[in-house]
Image (tube, rainbow, N blue to C red; front, side):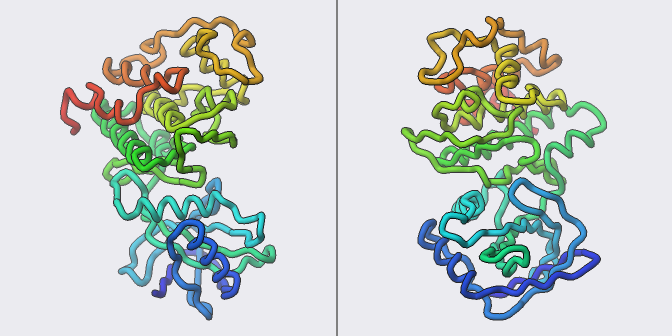
Length: 342
């Protein structure tokens, strides 16, 4: 199947595909992740133009028009894949694989991956393949949405958005996937106010014994177990969600610092330094490295918040991941169940 996408841009770029390189990459994807990318073409097939784009953590995203689908507006994420034995960026491969897996369910709170296209061989460096991940186009991310809001969000809007975020996270967790980078920039808001999870470059499947040690989660949304460098699981997403949900109420980040140690101080100033028996073993930082901070009253930090929302967020911001609410616990919390969503 042929796909042609048009970008509104002041100049044209024509990418020529190296068929052998593309075939190698497709075979790698198929063998490792058991799904098939479209067969690489043998000749140039698309003309791309663009001046509407922005840099994402793992590629540049363009607003585009699908000429083979009634001019549908789409978002195209351009990524370059190094085709060397040790140089294939697993974040890109992982994102494609997970989104392909999730696309079958068409969950309303997960951004849809519509297609994966070959963009050709990069001119900048040998042994690179340009790919375009074609997503449904969503108008803005949550960070932009909050900055553009003329005033505080209504309680109904906050509750609806909170439910969307937690529904998407619960869906991922039910499929053994940890997002690992939930933050306002990675949450998209449609014109109707629905929130969709996006940017799965750091997402990962997990098992109960897995130790994930790479640096994940943007600092202000990073839970204490990640900052301390110990094993973690789906609870990391719940902590990040709590920070985002609090931000819906205040339109400002809940916990802000410039480095890991200062972020831990910010966390403990809020929730209190945990007792020694809860401190994880075999970590370089000891509990006594921090003052014996008493917990703050979250109601003072988040004034005018709904009491049920306050209780739920408090249960999500727990130091011990095993005692933290799950996404499913949150969806079943009175904050959502006592009154119908509007």
